[in-house]
Length: 157
Image (cartoon, rainbow, N blue to C red; front, side):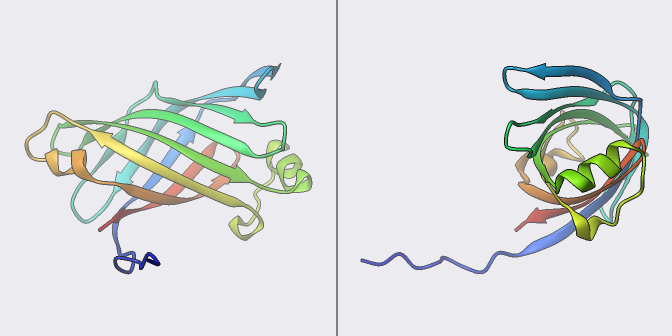
């Protein structure tokens, strides 16, 4: 029997994220690839159901694999504008030509159409008001500039 798709994939806009970043800490070439750690200075999250600020201290344990593709490994804490804490963690893929990687790491602003930057965030909270986030699968489309990343995040319905 041939499997049939269950339904069309539907999304709902969840939030826009803007993140200010510290200077990268280059760990160097490891057995897994070229590792660097980038910590969060702060930022904002704004959507129709919640908004708030990203707290300092989160970060990305970014790895450029031997095949040249970047893997994101991010953890961050959000404080909503009404005082609730939400933990976010996500993995993602950043894929660009060697030229685009070089331009980005040199501090040049590069149009997002020149690279592939996607994330899959998950959320955890003890807040009753935002407990619905504990049950959301989301995806995001990213863009970057020197010392900054931004995401448009969508819940998968």
